[in-house]
Image 1 (cartoon, one colour):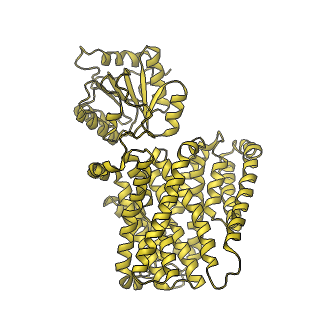
Image 2: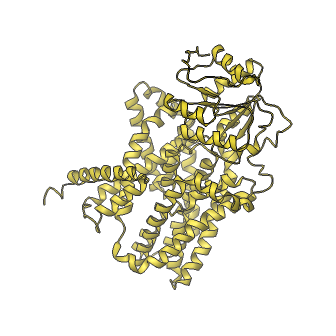
Image 3: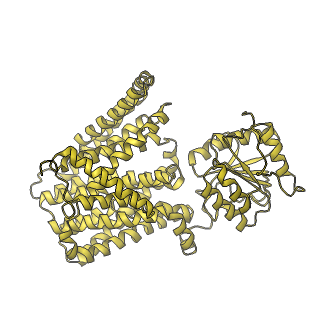
Length: 565
């Protein structure tokens, strides 16, 4: 039918189908990424065969990737490079060497030729920045220590993959240039691009953004344009579009209006990324699945288990805790969209055949599917296998536990969450003569807290081993300013399990959850949108400091509105 060949109708039908499949996925509690990849398979050649406008879908997918990487760069705190740069470089390179070496051996054992085995090994090496960042963002863990480390070594991989593509293309019979010269030329181009962007970042961009900020429409238009321009320039210079878009984000990361830009980008980013996952699923050729199923399963198992394992080993040796190493390691438990690009390049150059291309796509879909579940349920998986991971942690994980065993140090209050609300609470308590120790999973927040002469520790409220690192024996109150109900309930259970004898004060935005938290053992509930930090707040907390009182608050009584400090 003529209407079906209309690109507008085609994309409209795909969007409707995506919404329906996504809803079914939500009802079945399945990740949207898996649902959207399934849509790609459904509308692809082996499904309803709706994808006549492949070029348009691919373009929308590339725009989504560029916007995503721009948003990552926009949130990057440059001060964290000093603290996470070393582990990102060592872990990224270590995983690349490990996976490529053993991947090549496995490929050769299946009888593949040297060049095909090389392509397979390199394809298995790189992990998907797009998928990991999307999942970490959805879980609100992008600012956590393991989130920052994951992004760091994924960026290292993205740089390596550009060099790998140059080298592999030089292996072809048609290649006439020296691969060493090509790599050196790319490095020089990269340095030149960094220099130009650096000059613009300090002397030009701040004035442009300030002129645009009075109109949010113009500000967002400029931001998207800047991201796409640098993405296009990077590709022209021999890099990937992703590297350029990421650099565009970094160039605006220190701007005071970055939060406005970032907030407006979220919806656009998520909409365009839908086409990336659909495009990914549509590339699967089911006619090749039968012959490639056995090697695909073995390669997938290697990626799902071997890649996280090498990250665990490297980070453990560097002094990180097993939990951080494990959560970071899950970021490399799948292959990347770059792997598919690399395979397509090999197919075009005649280095590999359709079967090898199908094998790499199949491994990509298997590992992306399984790793999505692994990351979404990472905390539950860690709790289950935690005892088996002790061998990957040093007795003194000094990288994270900088406040070493503070049993001798007295703190009246341990405060979880060092955002604005937490800082207001801390200031008010300190003015009343109370000593406060902060805990947050964001390294930047911990650094800011410590720079003010306070004491803070990296930590995740959902970490079952965290109480062992905190001076809980001497603390009289633990306060959580985290408003997430599930996290607070989990923290409450952890504190009860470790027999914390002091008072537990939790925050909650939804008053419907107050009663259940009190029944679970909370002594007091803070309502941030009702309670502001002031004298009334302190007078209520004073009851918590009084050990002679059975309870320090009755959440069932009407709560007065307090004045904000």
